[in-house]
Length: 444
Ligand code: PLP
Image (cartoon, rainbow, N blue to C red):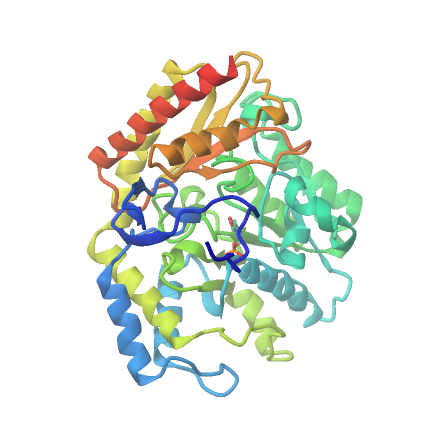
């Protein structure tokens, strides 16, 4: 067989060749069916093979598929920006398009710093973040990511931006218990800001529901209101990284709506194009934009493919599909059904320590001992083995590991496309049930 030249995520591993996808299903070249229980990387929100998205891209490409944003604007990108601004809360009305979630968070970092520079404040150059978080793989985005495994190789190049504890009640980093703790993890941010000096801090970035690094960690209800007021008190911008949680994934267009908290900057990616094309965005509030408009008027960012008309046409068609099929409403109801079904699995399998999530962003955490919540040894490779058993059985789930300090912890995300039905959820639960049973027998 001819040597493959495509670099794979794990060199030497065998990856099946994909043939096609339809709805929540993917099919490889050998005809094997997989349930996309993770929407790829929490991306394929409207499912696979939706022809109207391809048609929208084709219709746009027939007119013009590329223009450079410094030379022209284009109708598709203008309409998409308008649509996102309509959905965005508060005064988040200006949209900057990029091509990946990492670029979106990196742009947010730069805009936050620029916002203060435009006012003549040149000391606010740090963007604080939390441990057990992931904001992207480029150096700025990785600097903000509290994901030890992804940081370790490049640590000498990174800023030490993760400083705050995650609101991770199941394995509280402060060894406290909710509600008795009074949500001390939020108060801790204030102590940290005072220790560093608010005059050095431009922004604080959060994933509304912690995804890739922790497995759908939902903070206590009071948490974000507290965080918002601490940011406001110290003149620090609040960035909500909604790359994973945005576009309806949690049962609201933006996850921050669950807590009625309005950030200053929001990032989007993944579900925005539902994977039909690379596209992401940074949405900026009027308050922040006003300083730039009255100042340099230029955002020192952007990429060759930013605001690509063909990609914008795809995203517009995705939003139309979501609206026509009431996908956000579906996510809320089916998400609840999925969470309840996963909870039933927890009663059956002692290695399932915690079930959590919002909408169709659900997490399952595995522990050695459900009473003490002691994690498995890293060498047990629990998540990796579960993923491979599920894969074998035709179910895709997403690993959320390596994000907890000390690299410990085994969690997966169960996050199927937002079009999923109850019957299809039952199929996922059935496979997971067998897979966890099989894994348990291997661990004893
Ligand atoms: N932000 C969050 C919350 C993410 O989950 C991810 C990816 O998983 C990113 C940013 C980076 O996005 P991308 O992989 O598109 O660069």
